[in-house]
Length: 225
Image (tube, rainbow, N blue to C red; front, side, top):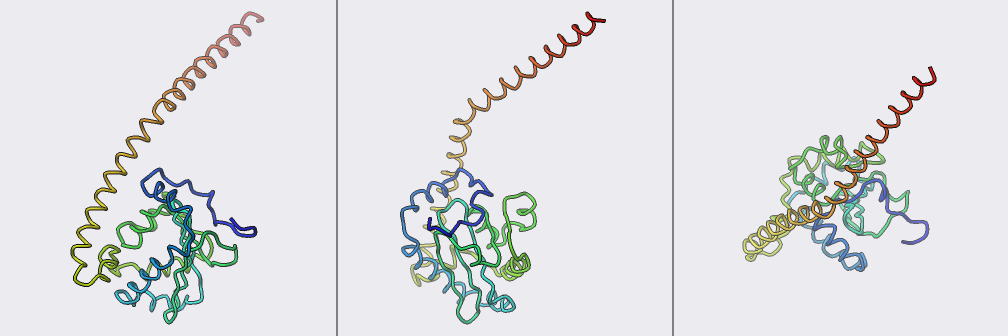
């Protein structure tokens, strides 16, 4: 990470152990410029299929929103200018480069964008963190709310006659990811179970020792009396 730059709030939220986190580790050696064409394409699709989102952000077109998927090794800077919007991939950002930051696991951010999860509930449950100008974040959420975003359908729409087969393949891939996530969670639980059981046993033993010490002190006071 370059001197004078930081990943905003990177220590404020621990990423969940998931297939996305493993993917993030695999992507870490890549330079952001390698990934930029993917997000350029995503922005073109949004402009074509959901132009009202940028139109509704017109009062905040000069505001920069940092989108930080905590389980991936990069952040996104969204400049919602209706005429020249930009979605830039960065390894890190300067503190004064963004007006607001939305931070959370990738799956949570996608679910929020697609309207599958309530933003207020995510915020209060600490699955989503917001920093900076909250008015900008609220405006962005209102802009995408009800827009009918479906990332798989939107992205595969670029493939023309191949869109339907690609959509089916993407659906199968997402289903496989779900199974992998469940297996990863099972593995995580199996790995931490001995530590959890050991900690519980230590806590129980400490409680017993504290009770014994209290009993000895009480008996001692009675003896002196």
